[in-house]
Structure formats: C-alpha cells, structure tokens
Amino acid sequence: MSTTRTAVITGAASERGIGRATAHALAAAGWEIAVLDLDEAGAKTAADEIAERHGVRAIGLRADVVDRDEVAAAVSTVESTLAPIGALVNNAGITSPIRFLEVSDTEWDRVFDVNVRGSYLMTRRIAPGMAERGFGRIVMLSSVSAERGGGVFGGVAYSAAKAALLGFSRALARELGPDGVTVNSVAPGLIDTDITAGKLPQERKDAMVADIPVRRTGFVADVADVITFLCRPESGYVTGATYDVNGGSHIH
Image 1 (cartoon, rainbow, N blue to C red):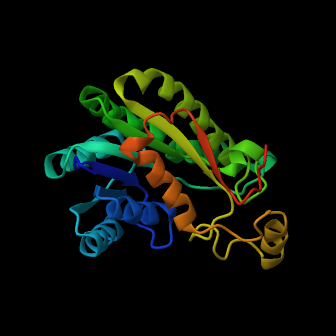
Image 2 (cartoon, rainbow, N blue to C red):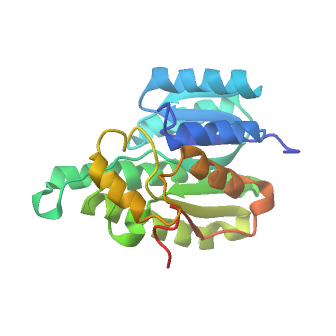
Image 3 (spheres, one colour):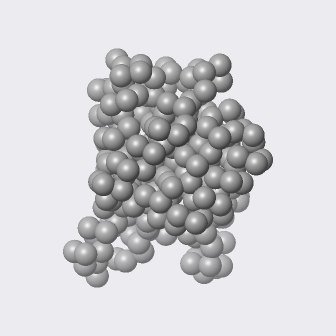
C-alpha cells in the first residue's frame, strides 16, 4: 500500500484460527497489525510472530469485545501506537451446538454477546475515525450456518447471531458508503480450525465433506485471502456483499 494503515483483527490469537491467518495475510500485504484477543499472551505472541515474519509493526492486546471499556482502551492504545486504522476484521466469535429446545437464556445471550455485541462495540468505536478520514474497510465474520440455518456445527443461537451480522453489514454499508467506508461479510463453511478440530465425529465430518462440491474442508488461508481482498484500497466498489467461502456447500 502506498499509505501505511493499521488493520485490527479481533479473536486472532488462536494458532490455527481464521483471525491469525488473516493477520498474517494482511501483514504480508503491508498493513500494520493489531491483534485483539481475550488471551493477552496469545495476542502478544501472534503480534511478535507477525512482526518478525513480515517486517511490519504489530501489537497484541487483551480485549474482551463485549466490554465497552476494554474495547475503548485497546483501540486507544492501537491509535496511539500504530498507523491510522484502515481495516477492522470482526473475527472474534463463539459457537454453540445446543439445540433450541434445550438452550438456556444465558447461553443464548452469551452467543449473541460475543458474536453481535462484540462486533457492534468494535465497529462503533472504530468506524467514526474511518469516516472522518474518508477510508475504511470493515469485514464481519458470518457463517454458512447463517444462510443455511445451521447444518455445520453451531445450533440455532449461533445461526441467528451470525445472520444478525449479515443485516448489520448491509445496513451499515448503506450508511458509511458516502464516507469511503465499505462493509462486507464473509461466510465460511466447514473450515479446519481449533473450533472444529476434535469436536466433529469423523463419520459426520466425512458425510459433510461428501456434500461439498470441492470435496474437502476449507483452510484458514482460503478465508484469509478473501478478507484481505476486501480490505484492499482497490476494493472500494465492493460493499454490502456476502462472500461465501464454503467450497460450494451453499450454492444459491
């Protein structure tokens, strides 16, 4: 990039996660990186790894995305340490396999807090600066479960929360478009991450892969590459869109 900017990625400490892969991909494209995660040590390790491998400035910070004060403090540190924030990847999220007739109010709220409130608080804190500077790229991590009504790992609460992000993205894209800020969603399918590893019986996983046209699970790099594309300055005419990264498991 001709102008150095910072990309903020939430939930990016996990070694085999989409967030960590996205942070690496954006760093390789020249972005400075802020890794935000509940796991402060993991976030710092990720940032050190990114800085060493790609030769960019990177910091790792603790931030509970459902806590407004922690979000504000972490973003303020990013703003005072790195280049202006040009991209926000709302990757932090949790899943839940509990069936609707067994789900508790507490579990429902927990899933919506992290996936929806967390994305809202991060975006609410960062978007005004983007709009003021006339440039921004916001990417929401939704899921094929939001489009298909489950069918992968998460239950009703997860599908509903991830569907909420699709509406959030589209409405926000309309509002922020005039300010040079794009808002898009990425909907991964079955991706080989720490979330799915060991939690799906092999028989179930084999059956799901057999239903995917490309006949394999996705790699974190498959998703990270699409997110990186959406964050490019050259992608400014793409907004309010949902990018399916699921090997064709949800062909409209």
